[in-house]
Image (cartoon, rainbow, N blue to C red; front, side, top):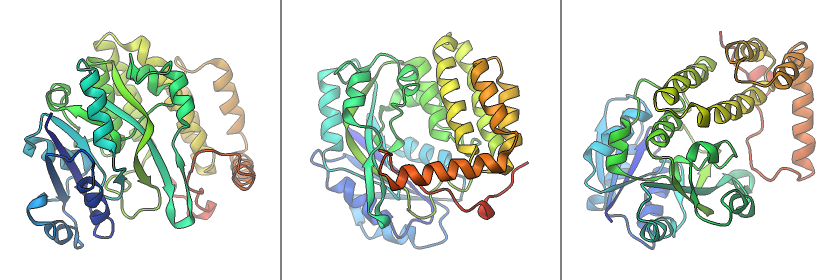
Length: 334
């Protein structure tokens, strides 16, 4: 197996060295490391160049995360492609654990795994999911027969943990540069239509830093991008005869997104639009619940924030999440 690592970077001079060092420290070394500087205006490229021949640095005009990852894939020489965001890091045995799984199950074309969510500046970190929960979903094994069904049970994996055969990426069509948000999820779904089984490692493989700087895709955030994603994949999954598998995942995504929007009273209209656009997908009880919660959106937002505060202070939440911004800090989207 030959593995090429793609690290897209945009204004990541502060964190890029940590990401590269974590790849160089792998117990199973990568065969190639490619950093794609997506039009940074800081010293990102200079940091990459300090590593000399250990990495390959490609610079391009700012075109977004999908285009940056595609540039890296096309330039790669490895049979397998792994991704790492420039503000995150791998744990030392990430590649060793995954290559061992792939050797034992040569039919697998892609694999991902658990990861740690870290608010490190606040001293808080935890695995995205408890290993026992993952093993329960996978019946104690390391293979999911269908990524769509696995994702609908919250075993999402993370871009930092993906290891995918290059020809499968190419067959699925690579990332869509024009899709500025949910760019990675869009590709994973298209891959799952072609190749449902995926390897899933229960132990954490990477650290996702929630407080890191200007993430390459964090600049693109608007509700209509989510609506477009769901609508597009309702059509794509039907074309691949996978609509029955995608529907539960679509419901899972919709409920998670609407739950997040409840924290912002200015998004009540967006929630109602989701309820209307995807009424055929959502159970009646869910539509009724969220309709009632949007009658007095300011009251709902205060209640959600209060409940989140209590859960956090009492240590009842296992996952590490960012605090919601102040109500005055929300941006209204139309």
